[in-house]
Length: 108
Image (cartoon, rainbow, N blue to C red; front, side, top):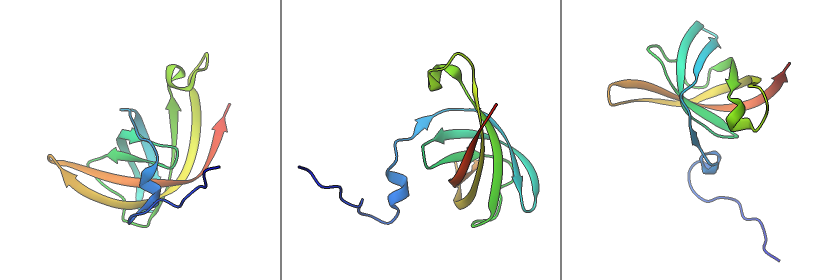
């Protein structure tokens, strides 16, 4: 029987499968609110683009409507997430932030 092995490398969280999805986000941060668009989403976190980025290690909250086609449901699924920003960078002139999702709650 195969044994589970801890992923090797600098950041094992990044081993989760990422799904490219562009979804609008309204992000609550310690510095205020900002609008963003997701670039990709995984079970552990997301990468988003915004004109203004929260500080690294800052807490964020956001609600996201996952499309029914992706979720395999009759309607979109709304998820409220609490997480933290782990890094950000500039790529192709776009400001990008990666965040880990620490908690999430399905909303009716």
